[in-house]
Length: 205
Image 1 (cartoon, helix red, strand yellow):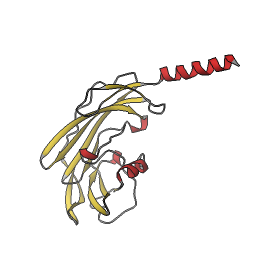
Image 2: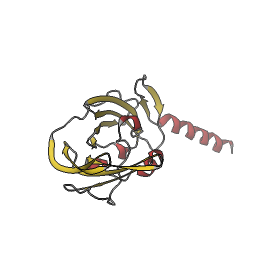
Image 3: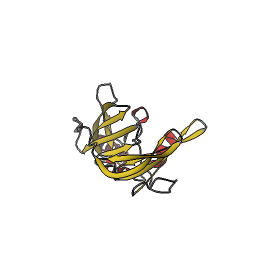
Image 4: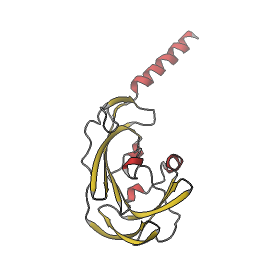
């Protein structure tokens, strides 16, 4: 019996020691070390760029991540504000020291999507860079639901994490393919986290 207990304790200690350690950062603070949960087997470093009203701000975010969260650059463009995320992942202890450069391709790519100005969602928006889908977002503000539309990159249009995001922010997302395809409410893939103006970003970690 004692042998079994000893083995159990040893395995538990081994599991703790073997789990990945990553640098974790909060904007404006010094990086700290974090022991990652079992399912988060990669370290990630990202640069979040938010452009709104002619102003651009870059913020570095670091932490543990699940392998499926390690996607390439993402972009969401609502017309009045654009958020991009450039992400790198690695799988050794404390390897996420350096964040990648911000994604900043702002060349029109030929796709057009509807965007909203106040209650008017009939305006059109030229999509930029990797934004190859149209987006419709419902944001609940108090008792009201505000509809936002714009452009989004394909790799952001995934169902992963959408339920948790909806619970956290009260936000629903859908995206579609084709010029001006977001003219009416559509049932499509959900878009995950991270991709609102910076004040709302929890990012991937």
